[in-house]
Length: 92
Image (cartoon, rainbow, N blue to C red; front, side, top):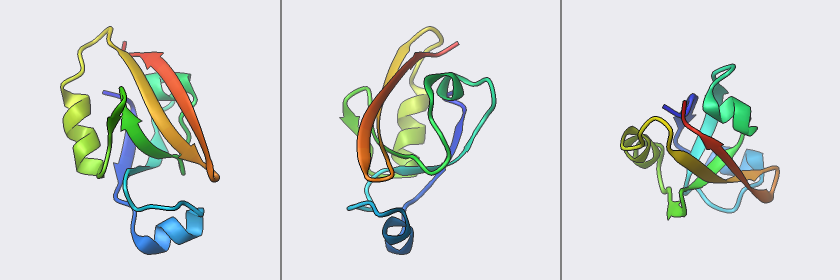
């Protein structure tokens, strides 16, 4: 629904990315033209929250995203290169 492929964050990957925690979902791919792409999500981003709800695993993000309806507003808290930012977009 969001237009991203995600995976779990291993301790090794967390060290490589310079992130403090293995909680969250690592974005490995963003579908061109998808809602996430339009919102500015990039591969390498770590999704920490979906609509203000913490995301601990990639599976948790997938479950939460399946419950979103077309036209819903989405806000993601992401960590990119050690900095936290929020991106918002609407599901088409």
